[in-house]
Amino acid sequence: MKKERLERENYISFFNMILIVGIDLLIVLGFGNYYYDLQVLAFSNSNTLLFIHDSLSKKIIVFASFIILFCILLNFKTKYSKRIMGIKIYLFISIVVFVISFFTLIYSFFQYDDLNREGIRVRNGITITDKNYIWNDIEYVEVSYERGYKNEIDIIYNIHLYDGTILNACNSKEFFNKITDLDKFMKSKDIKIIRSNIKAIDYGDFEKRYKGERMQVILELFNK
Image 1: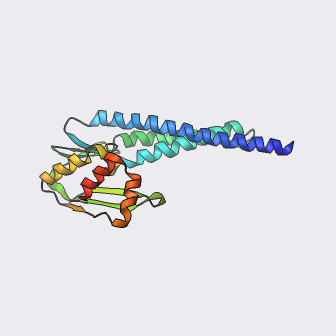
Image 2: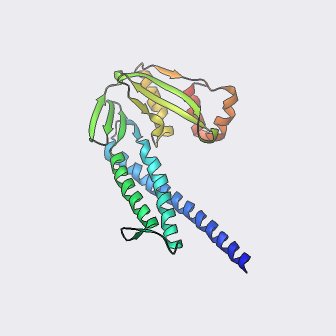
Image 3: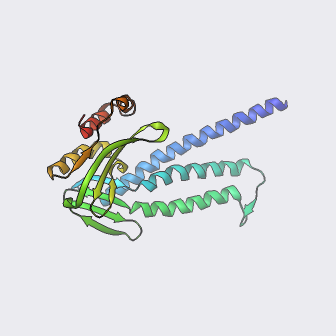
């Protein structure tokens, strides 16, 4: 009887974990897309070649949603727990994480880089001020790749400005849709673009990760 109860509890715990991950993915996909679409709608225009989001917002949406859901589940599952200000500790943690992530996402909403035909606008989220550049302010562009999480191939497309600012084009949600047009535009401006060659040993990993049109974009960027 005791064994059956433990098995049932383990099954419920496993089911709850699957449920948390599933709900978290729905939140990330739904809210993440809405957040970025609203940002583009608010700050880009018809001249925009590429809109680069703040990378911090992606991490906040993923990790904060998981922590909040996990703490809420623990709050209902745990009968007795410590309280802070009269609130159960797990519920208190979820509230704190929500408040911090909420204000951080508001800050990140106003932090972006808008690359348009007239020039480059870098928005600072803290002071909500713009710093404007012309295309001649670009020192060079770096097109390369590296091994990231689980040794997977990660593309590097960094735009280096003379004042030391680096714009990471890969943070854009529309990177694969618009990067080739931006690349051609910068070549027409005679901007120096340093491209790495894809090593023969890595080519297979590129094909595994980037399918169809995305792989075609990769080949165009690396001049393979």
